[in-house]
Image (cartoon, rainbow, N blue to C red):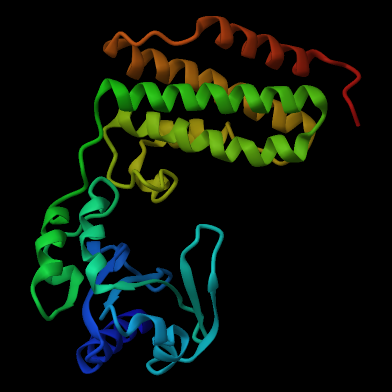
Length: 275
């Protein structure tokens, strides 16, 4: 794969450049899931006195032509290479290597060898070792309560938008709500490996019944199918809340949930919706 060759080029570049103290690869290629459609993702730690003068784009361009390099919507430096590969890069000071320890619960890799490209002083490996192993376990009442409340909040928000007639906005918000819905579904089915991006690998991770159920929760931004998708999303949410939340004896705002159902009933029954 092109990406594998690029990864080796980056490894070689890091070793050759004395300004680079250490470098870590994360994401799908570090976990062994990378394929020809995957991004490449790295954290590169530069000597503190060299970072200000470090030309990131030129450095990347030296091993593969860069078509664009910019801050994306998440604040990550993103490279679009001319060969069509996307790359996420975090260039930081060597004194900031401890930031890697804070990735516990989000990133992981099977071994240090799979992720650490360079570690001249051995400091990076100390922190990266905390991420070695399998995907973190996802469990506990606090986690479940947070997912449920965020789901209720977004569904209520969306139901109000539907009643107002803002269908495009409600459609965009439904995807946000589904992030929490799918995490509850993953908890219910014990498939939490792809937790940070719950839609990833959904076709394989979830059971056939659960995936078909998810499809009923999706729609275009047209009023009728969108309202139907909201109703199906909330129906499945209630079932998952019953299955996943009840065992933790978590008290959810029943009055708000009842109000949400009134809003959804209203928008599906309204014969004269806003245009």
